[in-house]
Image (tube, rainbow, N blue to C red; front, side, top):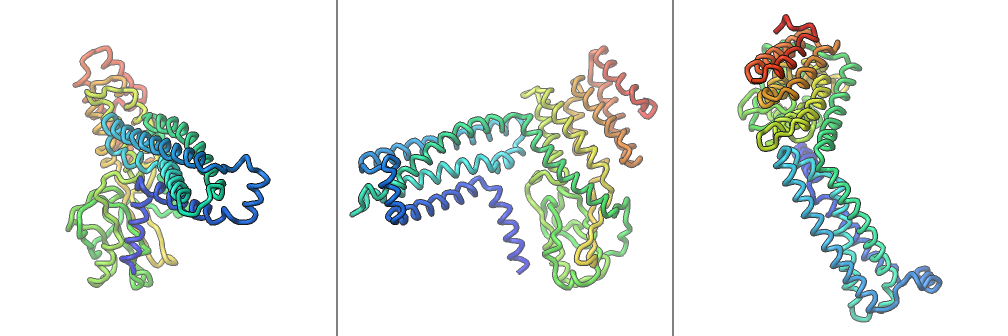
Length: 434
């Protein structure tokens, strides 16, 4: 049962992110409408409506056939053109920004719904056209279905105009950066709210003597699901410590969990089963996934082939706000389940690792650009002034600033530009630390 539950959860998540999910669902709805409409055509109220409003219903066979044939050809062209535009957008985003952005663009619900309406309308028109040519069918008996098909054609034209507008906005890097930032910010704000309410935050925890559960496969840590635990683990009082932080890579055979009490082999297998590992490094925006995407956008923008400091600066500004929230989280968070019988202890990425993953790559790629370095210095100094960040984490930020200063001194050749950036360190009053 637990295996089925986990399979259904994973399948549900994968289906929702599939570009075919909404098109298939909407097409099935339109097919149901088509067959249902054919059944109600001869109902007495519909017949009375046709007599009272004859100008709303097509009575001529050739006219109905011509309209349906035209709609099928036109909507088919719209569908092909729209899919072509989607592929073009994905290719451009991959080459100009980052291939990590493709899953988010593919799973855009608005685009999927529009494509679904196209395909659904196309299927609807085909069913009505086939019915129109069926033996013994009077063309006047399909007047309602034909007029509804014409109405759907008008709706598709409106959706196509909206699709052009929306997809042109979706490829704009500012909108991509804002979308990633908002999703990551919402996740971090929720984590902060939970920690403020529970006040269960720790700097360290002693797990000496705890039972170690090792991973049976490699992948990126995506979470621990207590709902998949055996009843024996739920009913007893257990403390479970999750070793990796969210999005950290785990090798097969590496320590994955620690549990305070002794457990048997079946329970060990179940604990490992509750952990979700993914081969995709940046699946979603939870944890530092969204922040790494912003980092990669900034790094790609500073590559010689792109050379777009403006985009790098925008990504750094958004990344600064997220990093400021991340560093306010406690090093270890605690969450209770099942009437506080089960305690799940999660590890939050530490400040030094966050600097290595998020700031160091930007620093290495942009150390010769005075404009980007100027913004990066201001960003780190802004984070360092946050009162809710511990002194240990602030010391890590100061060390990163020191490394940035050394890179600037070694990399920027123009002395005027170099001094203009170096003077920024003096404004914070932290020069003595460097």
